[in-house]
Image: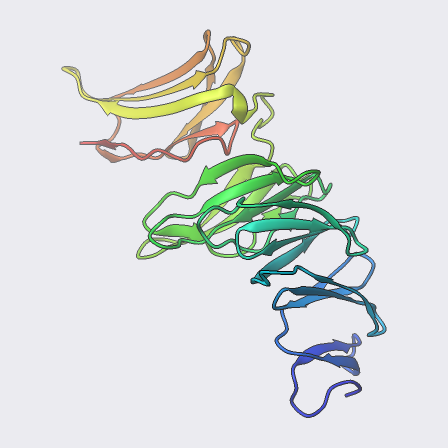
Length: 286
């Protein structure tokens, strides 16, 4: 194959019939990611390369000292590039390989999965793995400047991301595969904007508290959402108990749900509209 010798590693191009077109030899090599313009993005230790469809190199970007591990990239519809450097720092490059911004520490202490860009290119979302005894999380970042829009802890026993997230076609929901060590694997769906149709951003919410309160007439399963102020009084949110959603009207700066005599055992209680603002709570009514 042109460009590769023997069993050397490299980037290989095939046509749709499986016939080899060309090969660029270098090692090590990452998963190749296609850009909207047909170029291929690959990286080795600390350098990102862009190859044209004919196999010629368009550009390369050296991240400098320390070289560090690269994770990704994720590519927006307009070709803008997002890639992790040294595990925790998210970088953005133009389609021509020019640095836009660098957001240090956005992944925290856990190792991140490759970032995914929303269909309109405005939001970048990634998950982090269970690392060093700490559960992972989902993180949404503003693609314009790298600022963090929200964090959502991943709950469960030794739980973390299991792969890259994906977006719905309208960009309003992100789907995240979650794995638990010794638990169950699941798919988590989160509202990207955290305003779930109700127009309430996560930043307007202060706390979401859930408990099972014993009483003389039996247990009460109670959920209380507290907002930062009364500006949303009269609007509705949705609290979901064991998969059953209930609209709840905000009164002042609080929305409260109470269920009398719930079934014994554990219950999963979530704020699902707006979604993605708080992790689910799992109280036990024994």
